[in-house]
Image (tube, rainbow, N blue to C red; front, top):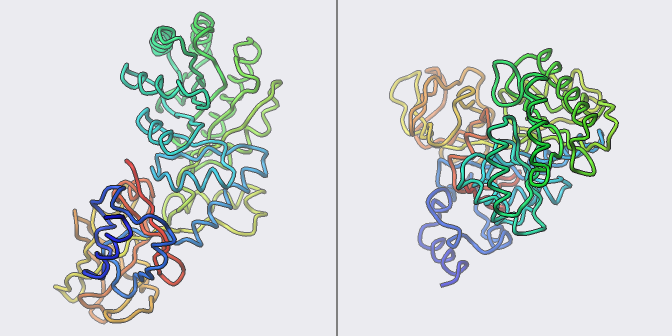
Length: 428
């Protein structure tokens, strides 16, 4: 039975799309976005099994274009961090909008991206371990595949050199600069010199293509600016020593929190070598109402490009759920929990309320808030005067999109009328 016929029978028998939310494999999905849109499923009309994670199409499209325009204004490149969504459909949208490539964090993620047509991957991590190297070696058999990973130690460099030399392949790497007390990356000039010396030994196998930094490890603007400046200084040292093996140097940084500082610092680097500035934000597609909202507010205050764009990123993801119980006058229990939404950077925030039997979302009262979240339940603080009952729907905004995406195999794309127009599959 083909996909459309199978789903047609499911629709007639259940009038829901509960199966779309979790548990189905790719072969069970509808064949096309057009077919999905033709069904007219509406979240407000109980056509969707809740809880469900949704992305608003108009806001998604806006965010996609906003970040690309910001990066273009600096003459930079965009390599969005794909590990945020692990959604090939969204990768395709980003590339179609002008992205230079897709960033990944692991060899497995790089293989997923390649399987879905991505032909340039910047793996913002070290490549360690034989099986991970085997994965990348197999992808490099395709000459159209452009791949970069990070190095920050002589030990890892030697392991990479021996492995890829035995394969008769060349591996492109970026030298990572790190923060004292932070995560990975060389910390000082002595470590840099040792790494450049080792790279000279492996120059036939390991190709140094530039310098990379992840500044998101820091919460302090002054510290971030200092780290970026040190990355520029290290890049100039690499150029001065003639260590580059690429026609242009990649200078890369930019998680979602400090992407504006990276664009500003790297675009003014004055490195005497052709340079491609590559930014790697991942969470901008859906944005949020927590840490990234605050980061963008800061960027809009101090960054001239962000200020002049006359718009901002919009929170485009919500998790919708039913009220399951109102056991006490000041407490409602909602059918959404840690299995459904991120909670590491703050609990989900109630945003919209639809009364049982109604179809008109209203903004939630300002005093509604979650006080506790369990695997499948959330404690909503209300007052005895609030009109809330079992079966009501509540939409929650989230903070930190990464840890909401990875809770769902499928997310619904809905329009401004809450009609399902597409489905995004994730491959974590």
